[in-house]
Length: 83
Image (cartoon, one colour):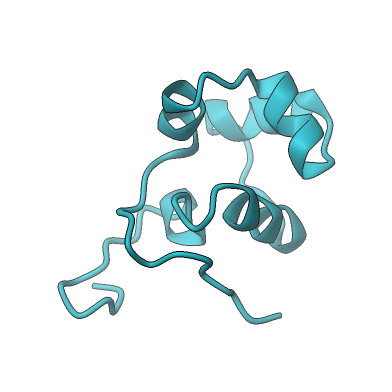
């Protein structure tokens, strides 16, 4: 599975910030990505990382604002490569 960034004009953010900025609850976001509320809540608490399919759904639903790197504490350098 290849990651497809929908928009590269926005800076990455954590899922919790995305939900807050978009006034979404974990329940509402879970429904949007087709996952259980408990899954999203565990991801938000850092109790689990999303699987590949869930990461893709998050990436798609957030239009690239929340990326897989956001779950692995990976910083991107100025040229877009992982540092």
